[in-house]
Amino acid sequence: MAVGTAGRSLMGPLLAVNLVVYLIILGLAGWSLDKYINGQQNHHHLGGNSSTSFMLIFALIAGVIGACSVLAGLIHLRAWRSDSLAGAASPAIIAWPITALACGLVCKEIILGGHRGKRLQTLEAFIIISTLTQLIYLGLLHAGIYNSRFGPGYRRWGTEYGSKGQEPRKTSTPAVV
Image (cartoon, rainbow, N blue to C red; front, side, top):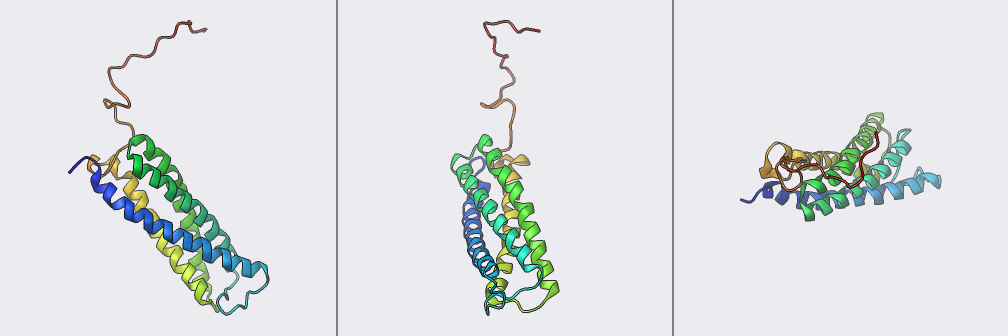
């Protein structure tokens, strides 16, 4: 097995699942927030309680940042180098806590109870699913740090990106001290 193919073979399907889940979250949260803004909280597919508006706002934010994280992950999947890993890991590290915050608001909404319509319950389920899949994706991105079989790590000295034997560049102009 070539170096890094164990993590790469798992990352493609996980990115596809994450993209679909985040797009569904964006659609459902956008529709629900539109109904809330229009004052239609008693819509038979919506319902909700006092935490619903906060959950919808954070679901939209998590959906946008999560979708951007997936796009950066697709670019990394295509390049599969340690320098593209940093570009994919940064939005993934930001997307997971925001998704986890939306998941916490989902838990609060479930605890408060009340009538929650089918679309709101579906949105809650997809937020919980996206929290777990984003955490798995984040783990896969960073698995290469521990074993090169799972993918590229960050900078490794002695490779083509940073060599032990290279001397610093000499410039023609002396440095002013």
